[in-house]
Amino acid sequence: MKNLNNNLTPNNGLSLSQAQSVSNLCNQRAIEIVAELLVANNFSKTVKVDGEEKTLVEAHKLPDNVIELLNKKAALHACQAFLMVNIKAKDNMLNAMRDKEADISSVKFPFPVKPTYINPVDGSLAKVNEDFGWSKLTATENNEYLEAESFAAHIGQFIHKDGILTRLRSELPHVPSIDWMVIKDGEKTPVTITKHHESTDLLNTHEALAKIHREKEQRVNYFKAKVKNLTTEENARIAKHNADLQNEAARINNDLATAYEIAQKKANEEANSIRAEFEKTREAEIKRIAGMRISIDARFQETINEFLAKLPENKE
Image (tube, rainbow, N blue to C red; front, side):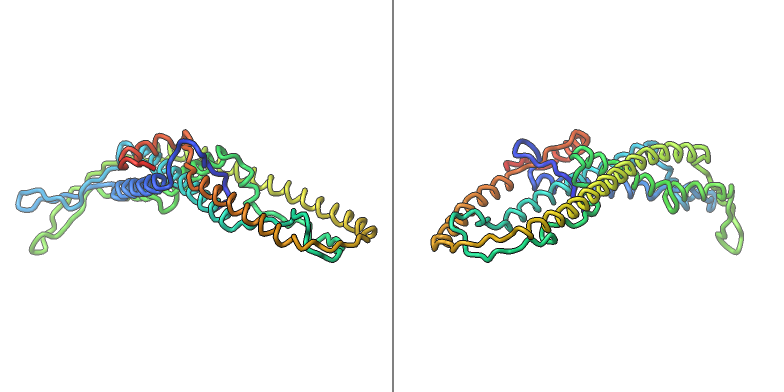
């Protein structure tokens, strides 16, 4: 997962358990939509046996609201991604605080150390990867990216090669008007094949979805390009910083001749006092983070409200 900004707040919002429950419900609803679309076909088959018409293949036309269903499916996955990003962010914040250690560098009586010449490598910065660029986007930009990426992926999956719509369009021109089957004694009986799609209808659906896909993919590419530019600019700044650091280190090392003083025996006591105070602060901070909730972005509010109403009353 990319290092995205989060929507955590100490104020009103979703609790962790609510977010997990809504995410699960989003996933289940998306599975149902996939199941509804996967049964689509281009024709039904019927045959008359002893004067009675029998159905061999039932008609499953694409739902009239197929675009609405695809939009709903994409919105569900976008909402689920939004929730999982913030659930992970809260976990990361808690883990980071639990792993944090007390800084005893500010003791009044420092432990004795020998003077050390500056090594420019110690203060140099490593090049960053694109996680840096993602971290510089605002929460709103990250949320829009999540939404656009989900729409582009799921609509593209439906209309591109091996997609449901592609399969139907490819199959339709080759559907015969009649078929034959042997009922008894080698005698062939005609099977009526009824098409329930027109090529123009499927083409119109493809064009409508392709337009949405292009728009969403353009936004995805925009954010990816922005992240690359931010990363490139930061690496240029780091390169200059490292060069300046080397020049400054050479100057300081030439002048460095300061001796160190023996640290007072209170250094250890003071360090322990700092650690004790740090533990109090850390416990308070862990408690604060644990109580944080997910502030709902307006673009996901409707989807979350839909499933939140189905959850039992939460007294968290």
